[in-house]
Length: 116
Image (cartoon, rainbow, N blue to C red; front, side):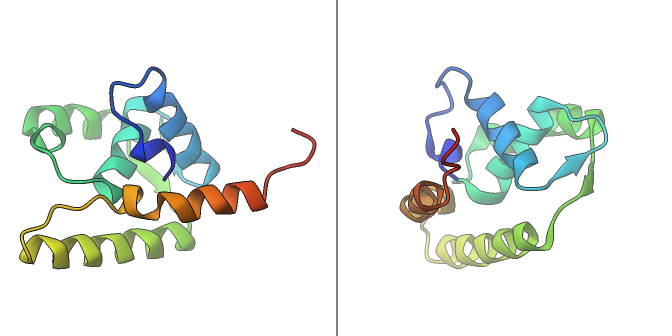
């Protein structure tokens, strides 16, 4: 969630998002970085026209597929979709990643590996 709330043009952000998605337990058939960076953007970020481009989506989704997604991530995604859906009905396009960033940062600080 922390990497997702960074601007898209930030150098290396796709790699950080893909790495974090994989570290959360997601496995894909080909471990394609572009696929692993797009999935959480679609799940937790504000909807933007460039994320819904059919040609780009076909290209990315034809290159890889999710083989395993842990239950905790499915439940977070479900909560995100319910919140974003409610907000869209109210004509607000929100980023759950941005809203949840402070709690994600706090969890990372409290659970940091002391050897790092």
